[in-house]
Length: 191
Image (tube, rainbow, N blue to C red; front, top):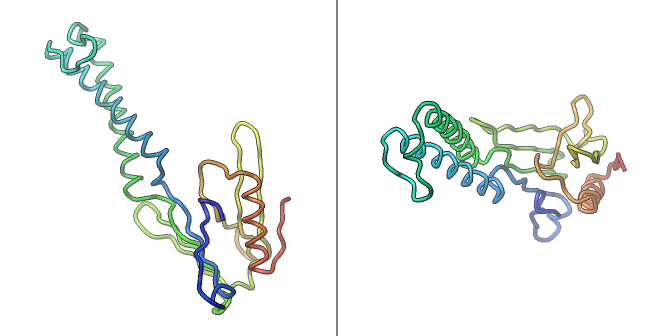
């Protein structure tokens, strides 16, 4: 399985009865690097604003104390505040690990359980395996590419199984979809 959907191996015959996939959330290296960069940028702009206000260089690079406080210092301060607010949002989402969860398919109990971490609560959906009609593979290329696996469930909207963000490689998406469709004994749609 891919890094997004990791199959948890089970011992003995239980592996034929249960499939558990973990789904990555917001706590990824790319998001952490982005949060660090935005934090450094926000602090830099804020320190530049303070340097121009106080008349002392608070940054080792350049001489921000030579900037006029009105309007350059104020604009730098606004950029700094915006950067720090965005950084605090990113760090909060990383701390929460938004979108992380699991997909559990249990043939013994005949149930499917999809769990994801939301902003302030755990979001969970349970339904019978017999209601699953197909595994759907969606591929859309272009400016905003989309590659995802979803379950077609009777009486419900399609339920997405892969994480939002970077699209999966097409070969991996096809392999994951085929494995899941084979396990659930349903059709694979969309290819």
